[in-house]
Image (cartoon, rainbow, N blue to C red; front, side):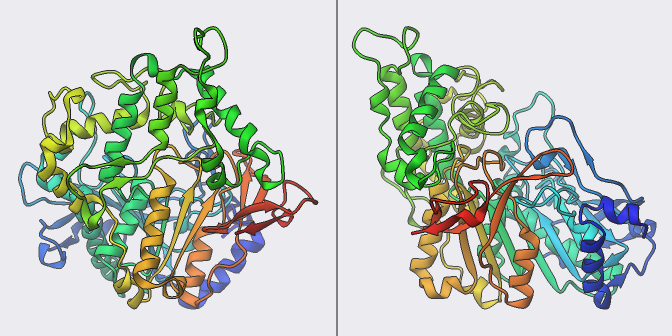
Length: 563
């Protein structure tokens, strides 16, 4: 391997040589030709869930490729295509039982020299696109190597449906098998198929299997810990949408609340954002445009202080109308199902928090104009310029819950769909707090919540983790699971420091028993060489990073995790 190739992997010469040396005694060469894998099949009997057989559609040797960074992209890490070595790219499908259901399409990447480990990548949104398993992991440093470059088998799936032009992204949910694949079955089926493929390709089974997911993928990750506790030894769930049924209904309600004169345009979003900073920026002892203690801020901030005086309008002065104030209060308040519970006895969804309302660039990556209010008021039917939560939520009401594409969502009432809501919750919500089986199997779990997240409420994940602690006991949970919170960071990792050596941290805990300690996160320039701009301690819940009063305000050493 040349110095140029080593450097292009993003580790640097010394770092990659150390990584290779550490794995040299335990690597396994691909024992068959890549192209021959096209004849490999996995019988339905080898898949633990009811399923059709799996077939390989293509197997092609991929040449080593250098790091590339796109000029524009919606998320910081999404612009980065990490360097990859030569590997065998296998694309296949798992057939359905219902002839009307789509195939589950998957990709498995087989390195020439395998380290005995695998990483399964989660999806996002309503999925419907193939996850290749070649990008950066959620919350990974921007200068990290791709797992396949470190010798991991990597994999992903489309979750059992493909998005189509001029069709709602939720339309697949009208088919029972397609929807169940999306909820949990596709990821388990891929696990079993990949295990058989790896056994065939390398002549041995995987030593350690990891699942990394963010958002919907984070829900998938926790679903695996709850439903299939022996399949994955290490799981990382970032901003997981675990209480999915509650989130969709709460998002739908928030969209309804911003219709008509209640909609908040850019000036009103900026007004709220600045008011939050004025109230809360210095709660950590430092004025730096970062709300480091969002829990205290949530209790302290009062949006009614921004309401227009009698006779004034938002167009005449910097203030909010009564309808706009109510819309913000709706976002911040819990949503409750009346008269029935969802899975695991839950009947509500916690309100969203504060900070990051006008997260730059007020575009596709975060803040209210991405998720809550969009760039135009909610419409029926939903428009791509609406807030994403309305675009997702209103479509889910039609295709997932009412299962009526022609439904006027303004007439939707949960009580009319009680049985279907309960059914969806049992399939989709990853809220079972009893992780004893995962613990007993030796699994390790890291959950990360970003506190300026408006795609989902971080308080849903926090509440879930506290329920796990209540179920198993804090001392027991500390042995295998940790929850971290990152203040000022939005749903996709922008706004404040969030990146850390996530794969190394989880694998050290999983394989060597080295529990995470004194973690630091960085914010990095999105262009190579990804220079760090600021660092903070990554604090375990319920602590948060407090400024010590002296020292470099951009250095983690100047902060302490405060109770």
